[in-house]
Image 1: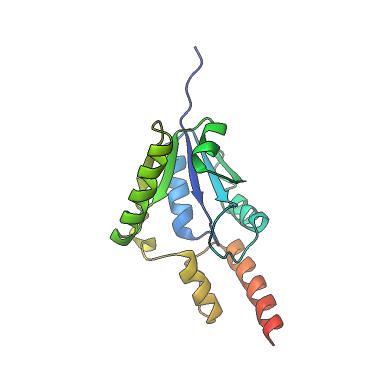
Image 2: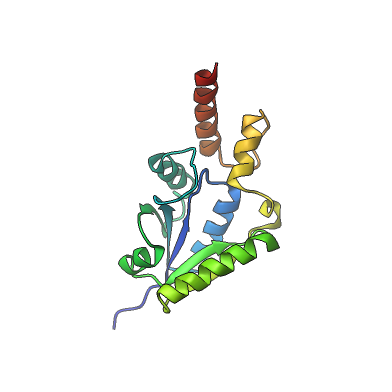
Length: 169
């Protein structure tokens, strides 16, 4: 008899990935047989990095986690889950303010496919305030982000910021 694998999907824009994202990825990879980090190509958010850049950053920061895969998807998340033979969505909750939005998403996904389960992870308290938007704002104002993002992400942010400033001047 073939053993059933618990495959979880961690969707998001990851623009850019932070230590908060990495904390959730590590926690999830210790619980599930496989974790698929899936970058949404249909996000309505105005992103700083291309999908290719975000995939590269995520692959570098998760390379030691052998049961983690990085990919992107278009369309409905529930359809992506079916394609990947998963029924588990991972979401992070940093604060009470995240709950209402995440609750709405979880119920909507369940309405679209009642076999879908959403599992919420609370990051280490060190990262509960951390967001990708905050990191981008700090770097734009020449702040230190060493404790907020892995070195590869800092490299990409500085490269992108320099390009943006050069275009502005």
